[in-house]
Image (cartoon, rainbow, N blue to C red):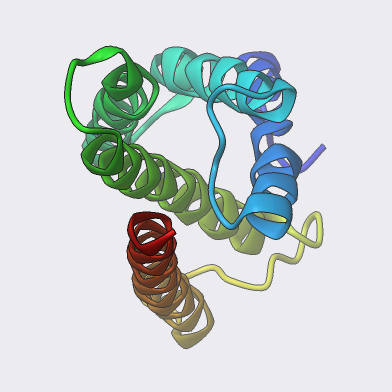
Length: 163
């Protein structure tokens, strides 16, 4: 189904829970919250996705995306343990983990458009306007989302300092 191999299904089903976990955390907290149940689901799913990409990839860029995702996950989930100021850690954590969600959605959207509906996908050419538009929309969402997160964190920090 959808031209997905058995290792591809392992990759897809293993990484799929990261999407609703991210949507839930963005909706509830405006960011990915590493020290939460949804944050743990997100981390495990992202690690499965990044670790299993080698089983299915046919493009070198997939290794770059997986490597960048792993580095950003390490930064985002590890920065809280460093002896830095809490506000600095929060910025790094928020931006790093938001970037991981962007890196998750790039191949998810691309692969979905190139496989659905089964047998007659919406996109057959990597330079398709639909695919390029979807990738552009993800980039705009990333820029707008990170900007909103930074503004929120800055305002929250300023309110805490005046209280």
